[in-house]
Length: 219
Image (cartoon, rainbow, N blue to C red; front, top):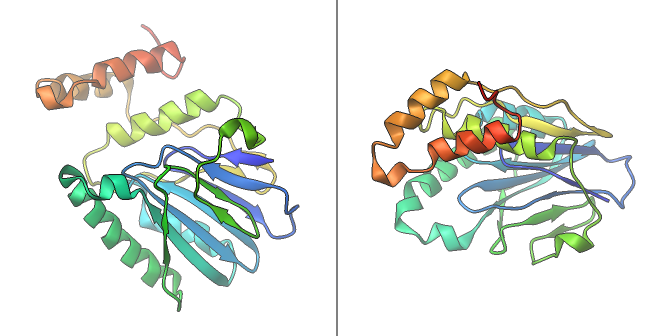
């Protein structure tokens, strides 16, 4: 059984849990994934680069004394010029995280060319895995949770790095949905400004999708 984690989300599984359960995340493109193994548990984080360093560090410390740590980037996107600034931001954040958690070892690199990662107590899998074969468990209101995190990421000031990590699966159960950081009116205002630039089309469509999912009211 594997628990699905969306972007700007994380999962924590204590070491006393069954070895047959794990954490899974997909759609890793310009994001960075983090994996921490400690004496008390393991963590998987899907970080867009806008979550707070503090929330990542605090969750890593829940694992107890760390035994190993990993980060994963998608090499396809690392090579694209327009994403290099974001790759550099991930590098800076990784350095801050390494220093803050006091890990003596380096944070080792993983390649997620397939855009997905599966974390178990005894292994990490980054090769292609059909989700139909994963015994995948999603949170209640999974689509709504995913949309809330997308909206919070899209409508925050660029490079604010101020979103609290959404701990989606904690030990034995999924947690309540996170809250939207901006009002519907604020997001519509930002969307209209952004869509004045032809390179930024899609904001209003995103809000319509959110309305259809019940994340935003339709009035």
